[in-house]
Image (tube, rainbow, N blue to C red; front, side, top):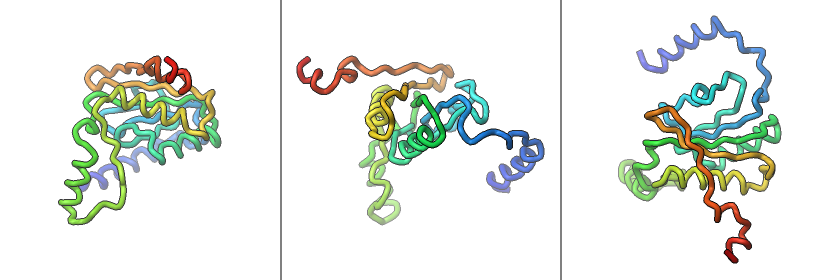
Length: 180
């Protein structure tokens, strides 16, 4: 039996006891979370959230990609979320390669030049990546400036979140940085 067949059987048991069909579409806590897809992250559990509390958007690396930004914009403008969290984690697989190396390997294995994705968004510093994603979200013209965007690194060995703050220079307006 395949894993898919197993999870389908589990779904039948789940559906027999399902009681959440009454939940509204907008998240109750008005929160959207962008996190890495790593299977060790049980986002709802380590944030103390229940089904219906938040939108959880996941991808490799917790990257504010075009699709993640699309989801955050819809989450806010159509479903009322008022706060965003970005979560990366220690021991991330995105630290183990460089985009050009992976592209080269895939092209060699497949015998085909790549079409998409153009970037895999590998990174070498988790905290710096969180800062970069915060800036991508904050700087998008469709995301209002009043929306708090905070970033964290989840430690896969302790279960703790560490808040990542921007360096002082990153918080200054561009003109102020030039004169500083």
